[in-house]
Image 1 (tube, rainbow, N blue to C red):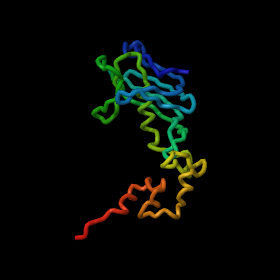
Image 2: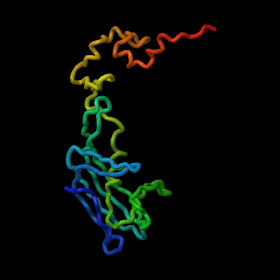
Image 3: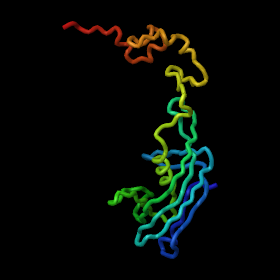
Length: 201
């Protein structure tokens, strides 16, 4: 098990070796976004394999594979959903001793370049960004997911809640929202407009 995906590039940068390798498995990925520390969860240990080759000067090329099963939330009921991904890694790299932390920038060619300073490179941020870009924007644990009650948050996949029983669906007036005083009335943002008096011209 690997705590964080690191690769040692000292020998490549000194031109004493043509390439460097790293591999392992990750239980999750710890990374920062907008100054906030976040965790990307995996349903099972995610294998990664990376190699970096020197291209000359300060440029290198990273290639490899990463196969995480990302844990995402169902867009309707917030249950955990396992999303398998099979990622092929490939990006240009540039060594810049003045860089405070590794970051991705867009080159003139339109390709992304991973800029780094330390020869001991932590690939957590790079793998996290690559994974997030490849993952779907939203997922459902089931196409027939009923979601949550908007009043109490009850998971409607487990059965109806008390709020649903108080006002039968057939009694709800789409124009007026619901019978006044019912819990469903406050679910309709237009219900308050029912008594609105418009001045005659």
